[in-house]
Amino acid sequence: MTETSVAEDTDLSTVVSLLDDEHARSILVETSEEPLSAAELSERCDVSVSSIYRRLDRLEAANLLDEQTRPRRDGHHDTVYASLLGRFELTIQDGSVEWTVEETDTDVADELTRLWGNF
Image (cartoon, rainbow, N blue to C red; front, side, top):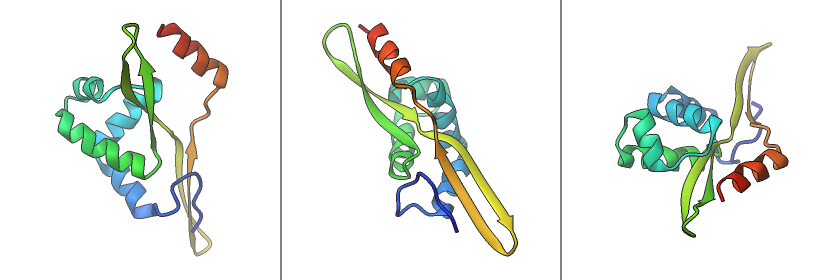
């Protein structure tokens, strides 16, 4: 089996289990557009904050989600989450199973522009 861009102790069944979870998929979809807080995800996904945190922990452990800090104008900050999942591919061919998880491409200039816009 082939694995790409996932935590070394993450196996295929863990990734598939996460992708099979409707709420985990919703979190990945919502955070693929912009980093969001647990409260924002709770509203957008129509799931309790405690359920969101359970999924966030599992997605982070599988290296499918990144925890970040978002500064606020009042000097405080929020913890937000951004999807790392760019592509998941499973191939069964010639008697073998290969799977890859590719991270999203992040452009440093885009990240700096996004952060600057928060000030």
